[in-house]
Length: 379
Length: 100
Image (cartoon, rainbow over all chains, first blue to last red; front, side):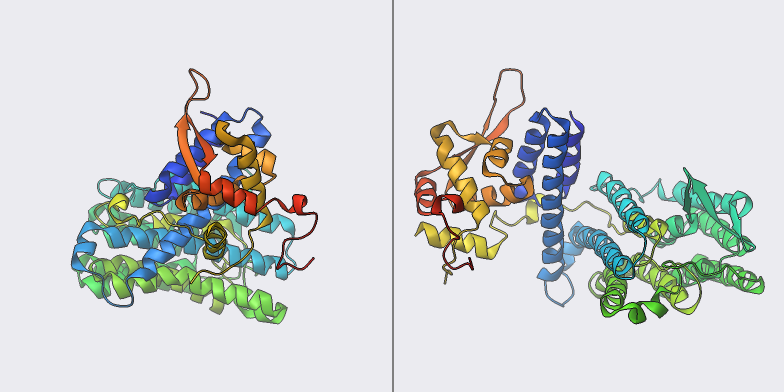
């Protein structure tokens, strides 16, 4: 199988069931093209169309059932949770797109835009490759959260240091903030499965945030785990919230004098003064990134703890960026938050897979005006 | 109520390329080249044409030992649609209803 065919096949997994035959046709066609450049160009067109169709389908399904609570049967089969996970991925992509508009309008160097776009592609490839699977189900979720905790501890011990803080790791000359990548997934993972292993991951993360120190992410842990405690009233979650509060207090006791970086920090405070387009893009992108949590809380009461943790996590990251010199998620420069957001969406699933074939609508044209034109011309 | 709206230049080009291939049919990439459209434009058009009965899509093995590919042919109504909507170049001017 050629690379182009593989790319098309991977992206066409996003397509609704009634278009899967067309996805297969495109993949086969991409695989039949002999010239690699032409095949890649063909594949890119297919991927753009598939992404558009998948986004439209996810939004259509999320908005389809009105504002009322979803039916019990739908909740039991897991259909709605799967749709919300898709929607969250789309929101991540749209939020990042808004960020690219902001960066462009604010005159950021092209390299920053490229880095954010590359992070989006990397995140989408990760999410796409795990579509239809439950990567944060038992028994994986426990070891994953512990691994994240260990990585954060290693960052605190061996990571790159700036102005007394040690929050970053350099991978292939790209500086990453592991806490922004892993912490949201860890928190939502804990919300999903509250046991000794995930609790160990949380404790490790609390210690790491206090050690680095990182007030913003320490506060994010308090908010995320606190949201779980508030909803579940479980001893474990309440106890961990206390631990997270202590970690936050320790982080606050240490000096935090990391100077602001243009297009990363203070974005909310400067976006509107940069220009109307930049300001709208930043605030609209922020609203979009919080939308999956709001929708999930409103509609999927069975799994509200997961959406509450997701929402509290990203709301706190946003608040930290508004209040202090901390990275602006998705809409500012920084690939770590983009990948972190998309990774966290992987934990927004229910127990069962979305049975796409049973809910797929019949094949119908998706573009009204062109379809109307074809129909009108034929009569 | 359906709106009367002229077809896009891309739709006209694809219809012309399909009509030219006639009963032999065309594969997706050939259509892209002959109609001068990108794959992301071609497939939505093909899907709509098929949905409205203007196009037949068939899995066909192009050569022995090669995987099957979608082959596209216009139906009777599709051929009529192509005749009624020649490509923009063939008109010698912009389609009606569009600013020149």
